[in-house]
Image: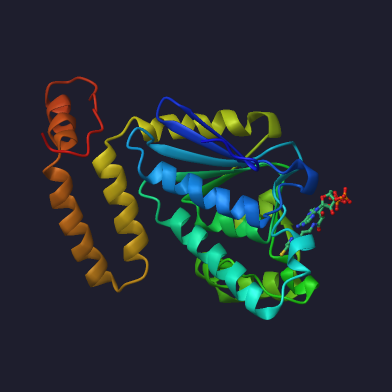
Length: 264
Ligand code: COA
């Protein structure tokens, strides 16, 4: 499918979704939000895609937040609809069955940080900047930032960022756990693709199971989370990939995961 505000490419098992509104530092317009949602639907039904990479076009921005020219015109009801659509889309991203890596290549503000927070992990270029500056516009984050940032970096750090609207650089974001790795700008995609390829070579069933158990387990008590793990572990064992992985080890060879979700 063709999109106006997103570039979507699939190479082998790795898909790359590039937010592409250079006119506004890739800010999230209604059109971009709808297209993002549609691409996520496309990905979730395509078994050939094993890993998704998110990035922004150009050298300056990942996503500079919601489009403020659109935002400024919203009444309260329209704002509620916009935020709800944002939540639906970001939840869809978080619950995408495959791993998602955010390659943050510049400003990731407001919705940009919220997209990074809903990704499975983040690699950032040295010039990346994170922040939830909505307070400066007289509003608050509307795509899950007050909830996901708090859960990731803790109440007090999140409150300071949200109350001040301050922007932080990649190294500080790494120190507080928002970023796994900081790369030179010209090495960012290389590093992300390298990790994506390692992941995409693993078994599809076990990757999906690991993501689901980690995500769902984060919202429940430890006993319930461990029970979820036991059930998912058993499910993995019934897959072709588990047979291949364990037998390859015993036969001293590299496993060849077919990635089929069906146990033929
Ligand atoms: N919505 C709409 N347009 C945006 C935008 C946004 N979120 N962020 C940037 N733009 C536009 C600017 O208006 C500018 O357009 P123009 O060239 O027609 O004037 C263009 O993108 C380039 O941005 P500019 O502000 O000139 O770049 P800069 O390097 O001086 O500053 C930022 C970069 C990211 C610090 C600054 O653009 C900014 O603060 N953006 C808003 C971030 C924000 O508050 N996001 C949360 C929204 S809820």
